[in-house]
Length: 186
Image 1 (spheres, helix red, strand yellow):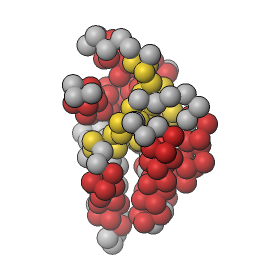
Image 2: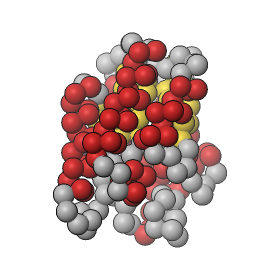
Image 3: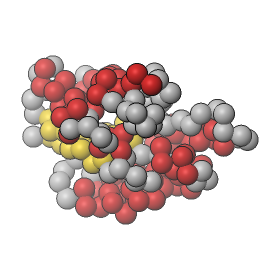
């Protein structure tokens, strides 16, 4: 059995929903349906987590071998206005820790964005940091995990921030597109 660790925040944890409706569980089902029965998806989502928290939290997830690592952290950094450079450094540290422990690991980076209505250059810098990290680390890249979900009240819980069950299906689709691309070449 090969492990796929999806490491993220409340989006990954499936905040407000049963675990079976969170996108990591949906990915597990997609793998099964497509005949990839030797993969097990681990949900490393923790609501409220930032990239700084992820740097400290990743170590306990590295006790089990990881074949594929999907990094989906950063949304809370953006919401809190943490400097893009700091977010980038934290994500790089997480990638480095995973690669140090498992040099053969395949990595997919999930990009995050914050609305352009945020004043100044922060939204653009934040968006850019994920693209730069993906290039620097030669990872597969999901440009925006919440594409089509963010801001759509029909795809979010009443809080307007966390995807509902339908929204989680879109997160699963965005992730599955890159994961399937990877599975076809490894």
